[in-house]
Length: 530
Image 1 (cartoon, rainbow, N blue to C red):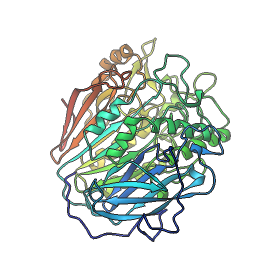
Image 2: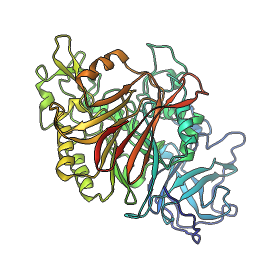
Image 3: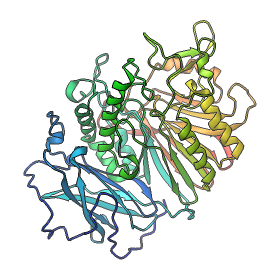
Image 4: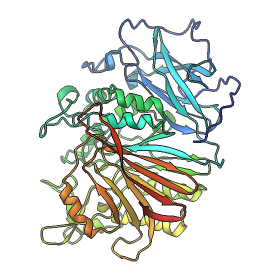
């Protein structure tokens, strides 16, 4: 974002969860200080998220023993909530502190801290840090968004998904951080819940078992948060977040488990997973504090007159997968529309009818040049031939919800939504796709563009199977799943440019990076251009 660097007078407005008083950190008699000795309570780093024109969220979690196995002492912490001081500065050296206060590291949420900071100047960087007792966190960098409707000439962001700790290192995160984007967008599978048994591992998941309880999910997030490359990325740029399936269980849909668990029992597991997600992410308590198995993530963010980013939740509200049946159809699988008529049921939705209505209203209110959708799973039609030659479709992505996809694309088309671009993760592959109003008609208009990022480290599916299907899917303009990495995007009034960044080897913590392919979408011309 084009930044302005005028310094404002010191502001004492602070967000939810913080006190209204902001005494000097060195002289607060009511501040309960703890002696940490050689342990680091800020071992999991810091993060910022949800930028607005006057602020953002800042996060940390007190965890002096981050992988502590006693469920009664998450991160090695016990006892009541702990006050944590924070500072916001206009410079990295903290010579110009513009805001300070105290917030609660909430015992009920594993001593995590979420501060909704407000009262800052729009469209500029700020730096933040936390204090507790004799401990000081690392410094993080955040950005405020431009004022609503303000002219903006450039927005840069990276997007990522599918970081499996056991499959490799997170050097892709390090390279993204080195680009210093305005924003980082996480599209799901931030963690993996299972413990690898089928393939060799590069690193071993926490506790050695699948995460399915609150203590196990907490330790899994803590393990990922200890990774230095992930910590660096969060410290460099604010984030927007959504999830996919592995934050809970592979291929789950709302209350339906791939292992056919009783729905009420599965919702208890989902509640534990969502709570651990909240405890480790820079999300707004006022929007996203979990309520049992429910937690709202979907929201939209405006960046001046240039871009609106709508983040979707494609798991919590979706209809049950089509032809969900024992013994082996609890997860994504190929079905034909003849063998599985449920695929075409118009009432089924990928994101739930309430979220659909919210999204359409969000589009109607947008005055941005570019309308960007961040979401979890493959949206373009991807047809694969079954052994008998019939057209098969994967049930776990938008191909399993074609009526829901058609409603979305029809709405974009009918309302002439300005420059829709979809960002996608999940499939461990780079794709660049034209999104057509009717994929089965060669001359159907292109409505939007889909950029699909490969995994940070998770293994891909079989290359030959995907490559063989390309001839039946001419709207897919590029595919490669042999590389791990991320996508860097630059948006200007004239075009959106995407660079597909591939790392040399996910098993090498010092892996290098190169641009595998670059694409553009021109203003007013939907569709992929190399």
